[in-house]
Length: 398
Image 1 (cartoon, helix red, strand yellow):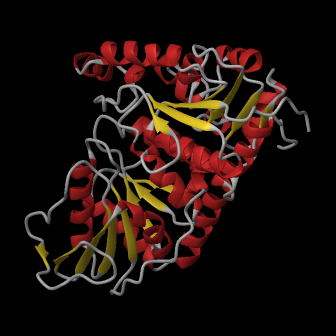
Image 2 (cartoon, rainbow, N blue to C red; image 1 turned 45 degrees about the vertical axis):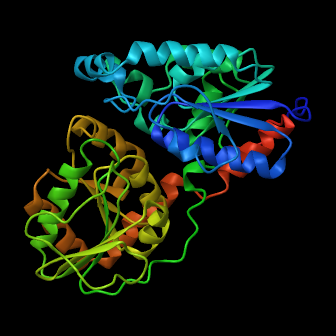
């Protein structure tokens, strides 16, 4: 193990993250840092969205918080770029740059892709670390369009930046660490994937007939449309019980054709919808892990939630939906998670057919679940990263 000087008492640590999943990872690292070094002064700069993942943690959120239309995918097409531009991209970016220059951090942790790693150079920090939560060598493919380079490949520019500026570099899987070590980033390590932390929970106590399904429509603008397709699929099943840990914008109501129970709700749900022999219970986002551990399979159009479900051994039936969860994004997710994710068209009939097929094939569900567990790895990554950040250590690892 290579070591550096530990962070001094009362050091100011800035966590900068550029995505919803990245915010979750940053929040987990902040909590783990606070546990091992409560003297540290932690602050967070989420550059995409409102940073709600940091809200209840020890890191004070700084900078402007604006939910731009692209959800952090500004460079992936002319449409998302123009939408963000109209929504105030320039103003928000300028203010974030100002906040970074004013941060006066003793250490900066850049959580995300090469863009946030570049921004992490702005604070006058004595130490820098990078946590690359998105890119994996499992995503690499020839002929990659330029707009996808930042999200699906370790570019030459990123490798040079990591080697020169980030003596502590943590990546999501052992394959990526070994690949980077062989391609000019010898300090790259995998010590676990923080996305699998804080998912301990007892399964929901939900009774019902038919397969147990968790619905994961995501948190972005397409979530309501995706939920509509999922409900239409459930209507076609002989019997089914589903749980929806709704995390989208604003409350969600029972759609046309579904009735909401007037009687008191049991088991921690906030509402129960019924149509025929299909039952859907709505639960708070905080019960996400309990819902996943209760479920046999998931139907989704999400990002981080798919990774976490797969990592807990729950296979996902996924369909592209809307301008942010595109066929290209889904294909990339499948390269990352393998057969833990099964792609189907945005068609309730096709979705229902796969649910029926998997309902009678528990061995297939278990096989796909095992793939997801292997791809995401065990929990504990945030604590190991936090320990390395606090002590200045570069762990021996994969």
